[in-house]
Amino acid sequence: TGNSLEFEDHRVYVPGDDLRHMNWSVYARTGQRVLKVFRDEVSPMVDVLVDGSRSMALTLGKERMVRAITGWAALAGTAQGASVRGWCVEGGSVCPLPEDPSVSIGFSFGEEGAEGAPLLNGIPWRRGAMRVVVTDCLWAADPCGWLGMLARDASRVVLFVPYAPEESEPHWSGSVEMVDCET
Image (cartoon, helix red, strand yellow):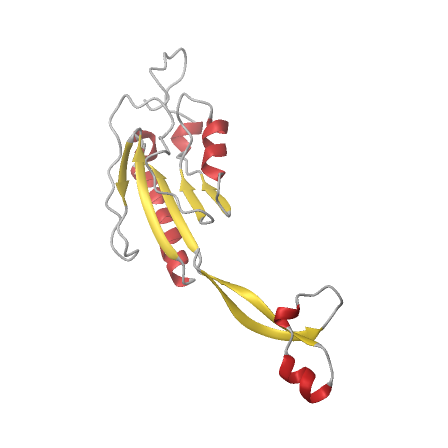
């Protein structure tokens, strides 16, 4: 974050306060010990991550939901004056999202066979940024370790988990052999 100090207010001096913040001109005029109070001015940052695995586009409705959530996150961050950056990750492949959130988000969903969680080490995370993640967590690996890595050095993590009704109530019944979590 880009931090700078901005004057906010005055308050009465309390023994132990830093004398460098004393307003000496007020003290010279009135004899009152008054401190200048400053606050950090912070430039907010939002990092958006989209899981680009095939399960994110299981149905057209789910794919539209993923694109809408991603676009909303970028627009909301920009509207609040945040610096917004985003990536689509499928396995070890990282693709940056457009910087202008009004541009249609053009990411494609992965090929069959990516079994693990999206790799996070190829993403240039910004320390202290809010991280918005859009994923269905449908991979063979345990998501707990992945989510822990995701939260490291972040101010907050917001997780959106879109799903399609077909995932909870599939059209098939009886004995079925699952190939992998994506198919």
